[in-house]
Length: 163
Image 1 (cartoon, helix red, strand yellow):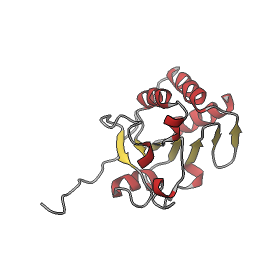
Image 2 (tube, rainbow, N blue to C red):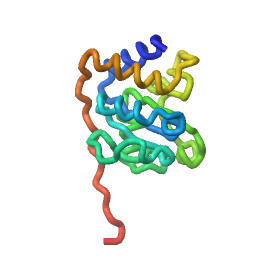
Image 3 (cartoon, rainbow, N blue to C red):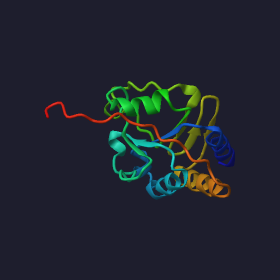
Image 4 (cartoon, rainbow, N blue to C red):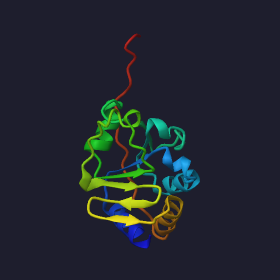
């Protein structure tokens, strides 16, 4: 687990525009509190999936909205797929209804998946890594030295098609 924590810590420290995706397996595997504590410390731009809705407190400044692949709000798509330099996907359940019909377009080189019992980036898989333990340890390590402030993307205004 420590190697996975070191890998993600290093990538977070060098990232300028990270985005965190929070999905339903965070809740199903008892990691909601650990994820919320980590997000509060990181304050990185964060989205949830349709099935992960309500795990992230939606009134938080760092919360951007729902990410559901190509059927997402355009500003959210741009923040996740184009403008980010690191995407951390927590507890992903890649079903068709949760990924916009599998229409996500995230470059593998900037994508890290924190599964329920593993962590994976483009080049390596760390096995036997419990999601609760990992998120807790990552927060502990990150708290030992301050993180930089991340910029939040500006999202286009929502207009009512029927004013």
